[in-house]
Length: 399
Image 1 (spheres, rainbow, N blue to C red):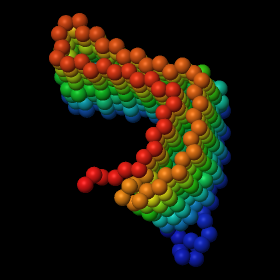
Image 2: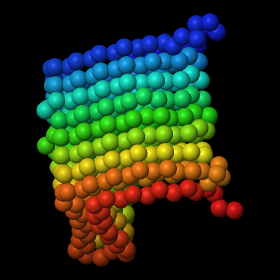
Image 3: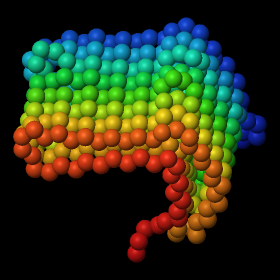
Image 4: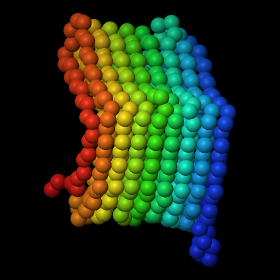
């Protein structure tokens, strides 16, 4: 469903435009792509998306009151299978994206008031990609990603005030997976899996302001992201995995930002990145798992945050690389139970007022493993596990 409103006359602009949206999806929504390619001389692009409920639109020069309710009970899944034979000389660019409920709204020169409720029942939201074949050679490199999100809301504003309440509840298992098995990649190749239970993103620019209340609940069995990127010989190979139960990322410029966030997670959260290459130039394996994450920045004078986070689901990140002969290997695993970051502008005489409560009662684990069977030049390996993390600061450019 799409909505759009253009600039109104001066008289009509006194009254706000209104959108009332109610969406209920009971059945399964499944999309699949199967691709067989032999000796491709150019780029191989693949886009695969599945949406349970979707609402998008914007207003320009008028005020919008938006009330939205989205409910999903069926499975949402996007699956991509790519079989490569011989030399693929162009880049392989493949995106696989599955979302249960998806809302996107923007305001340009007019205020946005929103009341949004997104609910996903005890179901599955999955995105998966498999790349293989008889000894595939990716001469042009690759960029492959899978993204699975139960509830997603994105707000944008320019010269506008954004206010309201967004509530997200997910009882779904959320999974994003990539398996890549190749012979030879003499170029940059990156494989990224990302899974999120509930996600809110808000970006406001040019004399805008934010006054938002965000409530997120994730209670499905798991939120997992798994990347397995493998090659016989790779020049620059990276495998990344990120899993987050609840995430709110906000940025504002030119006005005050007053935000209340309330996050709770019961799900097991796991990110797993495995990278292997017998011969390698540069190899990277990174995994990041977070139960509850809040990041709020205001490039102006005043920032107020009232944050509450509770996690009782286990959090685990595992990253590994195995190779025989090569040059540089980078492996990192990071796990966090609850995380909040808030910052304001020092040049604007910024002020921060924060109330923060974080409770973590689950295990938080991080494991990084690097194995070089033959010879290598440099190896950097790190692991970090934190129960509760809070960072608040006022900063500006150094003179």
